[in-house]
Image (tube, rainbow, N blue to C red; front, side, top):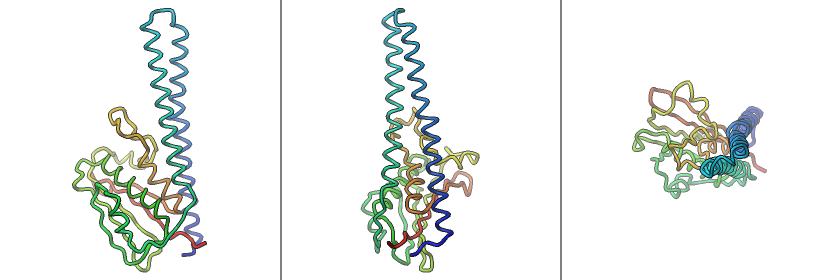
Length: 231
């Protein structure tokens, strides 16, 4: 269970990528709400004498923009705090039983030939976030699958989620893990960055997550988790 140099490099790259996504979202999405709030406040200051209706309209815009930015900031920081809390690894002899207790909406299959040594709480979060991501993006949830694989001669757990979808274009699949990519007005129930959570939590477990469209209309999200090092 001792990490090698290659795993160290992969873990560093994954963490660096996660923080870059986090920082770019703070810069783009959260700061956008701050800019909107400032702009609406300036208009309110300029037009406050026009009519009560004008004042109410700009006041509502200020409230909406500030609340949206605050919600995004809370979602992002909570996600990062959970992902990068100290790891507490255990030997998981029955990963399948652990996952079955999560009541996922996605069919979960297991091909495990040995135990997993990792943080059980964070692994649960990955399965739950992957399940929610597949449900969010799928055109037919009955076809969603999560397959977990670990061979005897391998030191890493592979978790692969697949779903039929028309929501992801090949040119956009590399941006799938952008934290607020699917925080859209027509999806009001999306209140936390579940797809980014997969990436960040995998990085905290010294692994990584990748997305691809191996065939037309099929999304594949693959998570690789090496055994954590013994202390």
